[in-house]
Image (cartoon, rainbow, N blue to C red; front, side):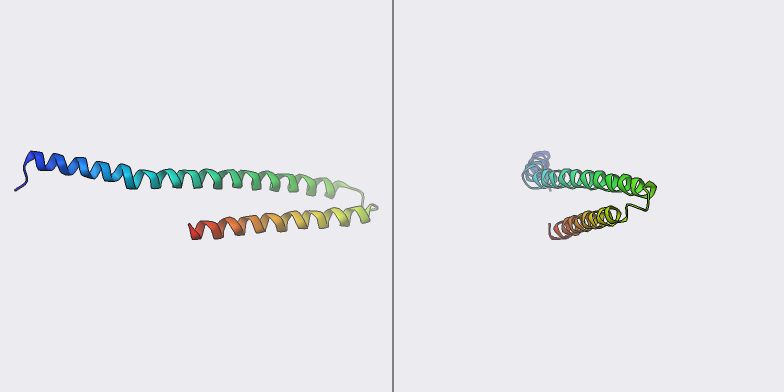
Amino acid sequence: MLTQEDLQNIRVEVGEAFEQIVLPQFDRIDQRLERIESDIRDIRLEIGSLRRDLEALSTRDKEDSGAFAHELLDMKRRLDALEQRVNQKEAAALVA
């Protein structure tokens, strides 16, 4: 039968193990989440910028078709880069 002292020793050992093993894991998870949140904020800012650019393009005169096409291609490249960043983040999240 366990004594009060045995129970207290078990509590201390479990507490020490928790502090040594579990808490550092939480710290690493918090750091990863902060990086992911930062990346998501950056991606949202870029998406907002693309939306504003698209709105500006939709109001432009169609006579400026050469510049219009160039800007559309530039936006496509930006969207492709964003998609690649998202795919990389997803792959990194699956590995970790």
